[in-house]
Amino acid sequence: MPSISLTLDGLVTETTVRFREDLERHNDIMRVRPLRASIGAATARRPSALSAALRAADERMYAAKRRQRRISEGVIE
Image 1 (tube, rainbow, N blue to C red):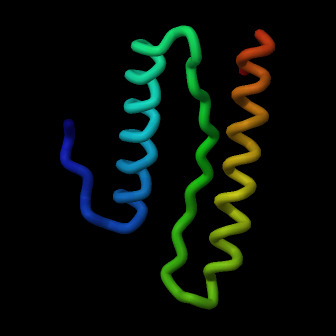
Image 2: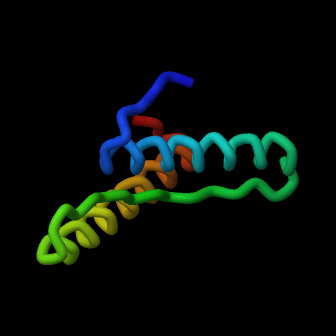
């Protein structure tokens, strides 16, 4: 695995990639009941920016849900 700098954004990216890979491995084993997850991530460097970061993560999660729904319905982007 390539080295990712230990920045906050890098850690968020690495964590979401690892989660998706783990989910894929799980689904390869448990084909009868595959799991799906939508992830929205954002970082806040100041406490005052937390609300904006949570909104951004929420928006990203719902965008991922819409994208996954289109894929499962056969309308691939």
